[in-house]
Image: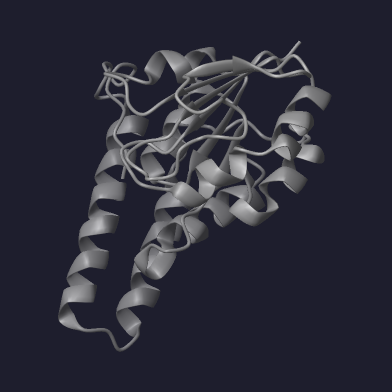
Length: 216
């Protein structure tokens, strides 16, 4: 039986995701799928969870039985990710590939306000390959109501060729457009970080990643 759902935005601000989670529709959808507990890591955003947890409280049990816990940050969220039966995350490459490495079902929600939104393209690419599910804040409740993880395919960590090729194609597309130099530099930096992170994860050179998760 499914148990815990973990929502994480890492070190980012993603109020739209936290606000989308903080609804009775999401709570009812999770309970209908058999989940018993919802843990929300809200990060540095300004939005305060108020629908599922009373103001000033960090935990609450809803009338439908769902236990809800909220916190901003923790020294490590690795244990939460390991314990989760479902992860709902911002679509940073670090969070996505950590969930895939752990073999956890993932609903990735891209942050639409990010420049050039590489998050959306990466999440949609992996969703098309049936490795993850992708949603938007405004569609999250509906996605959870119709959640089906049976069709998800395990991610083979030894074969990163397709993902790397996709990252390369995104970078080429960005650079082929008329962009200011600062924007080109930003895109290059982002994808260099993504590539290095992915190479380290998939080569197995870092065995201590369980306790130090990189969010980008």
